[in-house]
Image 1 (spheres, rainbow, N blue to C red):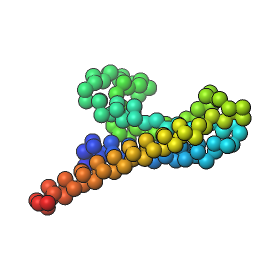
Image 2 (cartoon, rainbow, N blue to C red):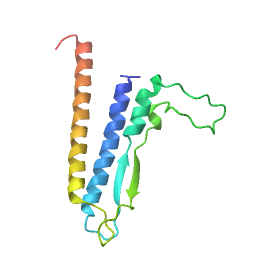
Image 3 (cartoon, rainbow, N blue to C red):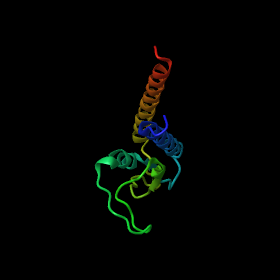
Image 4 (cartoon, one colour):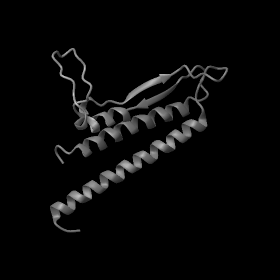
Length: 134
């Protein structure tokens, strides 16, 4: 398990999805609060950069102040939560759409379940390899 990129990706993905579930549930809870700006969480683009890093040619950094074009490891991946206040479509300045948030909640829940299934399969593969049988 140590050094396996898939375990790290699963861990970061589950953490990011959990943050997205929290933000979406906060949005739903505050859908009638005046001037509430809905929250969004993004992290998938960072995970994709880490997964695709071996296929990219990294820029040479001559100073610590220079930025890199490739995320070096999974520890640099952090879910980014932001407030979306510019999409105001109600008179009370609240921008939470209950149908959109419910759909986002269902999508996030399905992604979370898929990742836990993937994790369960990896554990069973390791058990089979260690135990030598079914």
